[in-house]
Amino acid sequence: MSYDLDNIFAQILDGRIPSAPVDENDTTLSFADIQPQAPQHHLVIPRGAYTDLSDFADKASDKELADWVRALARVAKKTGVADDGYRVIVNVGRNGGQEVPHLHGHVVGGAPLGAMLTAKG
Ligand code: AMP
Image (cartoon, rainbow, N blue to C red; front, side, top):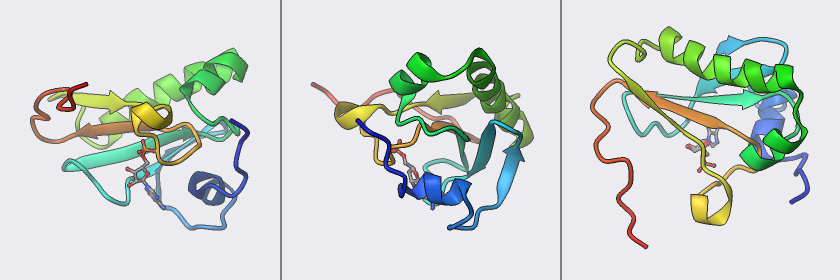
């Protein structure tokens, strides 16, 4: 899949859509999900143009990879969910339910999250 330069997160990254970051550095940006599915629900995205986790794993530098993983854990801490536990979700592609074609990790918590999966094949 080629990268869509006009996807929502590309527009957040270049300022076409305003955001209120909870965390950011030179390679990642993190902000609240607009439709939270838990008391705390934030998204952690790389600044680079990666469509999904597979694309990121193939093309990102070691620094970008490490920074994104560290940002996920840092956002969990900053949003107060780290101590009681949380879930990181990365949807990939059609079967994974990915809606926005720019890699993002969901960091969700703040309450017991229940079963990991409900969909049955
Ligand atoms: P996914 O289904 O994994 O692609 O998740 C996309 C997520 O992006 C959903 O949870 C949406 O609520 C969220 N989202 C879409 N637009 C925005 C936005 N402008 N700001 C924050 N979150 C958004």
